[in-house]
Image (tube, rainbow over all chains, first blue to last red):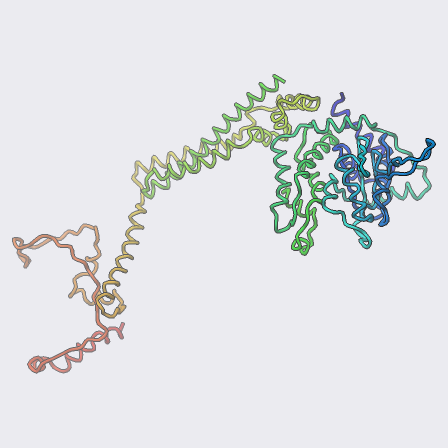
Length: 311
Length: 269
C-alpha cells in the first residue's frame, strides 16, 4: 500500500521520463495516462507532425507492457488486426493454428485509424469493449491490461473513413493536440536537429503496478454533489437540441467520473475536485456529441458547446 | 474514523443553528418591512403574514435543502470539495479516504465555527429589524396612515358612475352631447344649484337657517330623500312652438335669443 503523495511522485517520474522524448504536450501526456488508469482507450487527434505517435510510443517504453503497432491503410483487413488461422506443419502433420494479430498486446497503437475501412475499424469493436477476439467459432481472451491508443488527423479527409459513432464511443477520451509553444518548438529543434543523443526513457510502471493504480483510481472519493454535477453535464448534452443533434450516452457519465478520479490522483488530490470534472469534460464529451447544422453554421465546435454546458 | 464522525456531527449542529438564525432574520426583516408598508396604507396585517409565509416557504426550501457542508466549504475554501467527499464516503475504508479524513480534521481544527457566520450582515439585519420595529410603533402611536383602499375605491366608483350615467342617457334615446361641464355648471348654478354641493359626497355640510328670513316651514319638512344628480342632457337643437297668444307676448328678438342661446354660448366658449 502506498500513499497519495508517493503515487503523485511516481506520476511525476513518469512524466519526466516521457518528457525526455516528448517536448511539451504535458496535458496530452496526462490525458493518455488517465485513459490507461481508467482501463480504457484514447483517440488522439492533431495535425501531422505534432508527436501523436511519438507520445504513444514513448508511453509504451515507460511501461513494462506488450506493445504493438498497426498502421492503418485502406486495404488493411480485419484479419491483419485480429489474426487468422494458418496451416501449421511444425508438429509433423498439417493442422490449422491461430496466428495472433497485433491486437494481442497490452498496448496497441492504431496509427491513422480513419484511413482503414469501416469493416476493419469494426474489427476493433469487440476487442475494445469485450477484451476478446472472435475468429470463426473460437473466442480468444486478450491480455489484461489492454489499451487501444489510436491517432487520426483532422485534415486530408480524402480517402479516409470517419469513425462510426459506436466505434468512437468506445474511446474514453478524444485528446486534441495543438501546436507547441515557441519555447517548446525551440527545444524540439535543439533535441532533434542538432545530432544530440536522445536518452531512452526508463520503465516506471509494470503490468502489476498499473493494474494496482487502476484499482485505486476507482476508490478515489468523490462527493455526491460532484457526481450529480458530472451527470448533469452529460445529460445537458441531450437537452440542448438547438446546438446538439445527438447527445452523449451514459457511458460518458461513467467515463467522466472515472477520468475525473484519475485526474485527481495525478494532480495529488485526495478527492475529486470540481476542476477535475470540468477539465475532463472536454476529452470525454467532444467525440460523443453531434452538432446541429445551426451550430456548425455559427462556426461553433464541440469544445465551444461543452464550455457552454459546464457553465 | 469515530473522531471524524463526532466532529462532523458537531459541525452539522452548528450549521443548523446558523441556518435557522439566517432564516429567521431574513423572514423577520421581510415581515416587518411589508407590515410597515401595509400599515401605512391601512391594509390588513394578515396580508403581510400571507406574503411572509410564502417567502418563508421558498427560502426554507432553499436554505434547508442545501448541503450543510457546502455552506461550510463556501465559507472556508481550504475545505473545498473535501469535506463533502468525507461525509458522502463515510462508510468507505481505503488509504485515500483515510488520508483525506486526516487532512480534513487538520483543516477543521484551523476553522473557527464563528467564522462561518457573516457577522456584519447579521448585525446589519438586526439593526434594520430594530429600525423597522421603531417605525411601526411610531406609526401606530401617531396614527399615520393613508387609506389606499378607499382612495382607489372612490376613483374607481367615480369612473363607474360616469359610465352608468352615459348608459342612462343612451338608453333614453337622446343624442349624447359632450359639453364642457365647468362652463355649464358655472352658468347654471342658479337653475341647478351649486355644483360643488352636489359633489360633497360623505363630507359633512352644516347649514344654518335664519328662521326669520327662511321660506321653509319646519313643520312641513319631510324625510330626507336621496337624489341623484345627473348632468343636464341638452338636445342638439331646441325647437320652439308657439301660438298666437304667446306670440303676442314674446317679441321676435327674444325668441331668436332663446333659439340660438346654446349655439351662441358654445361658440363663445
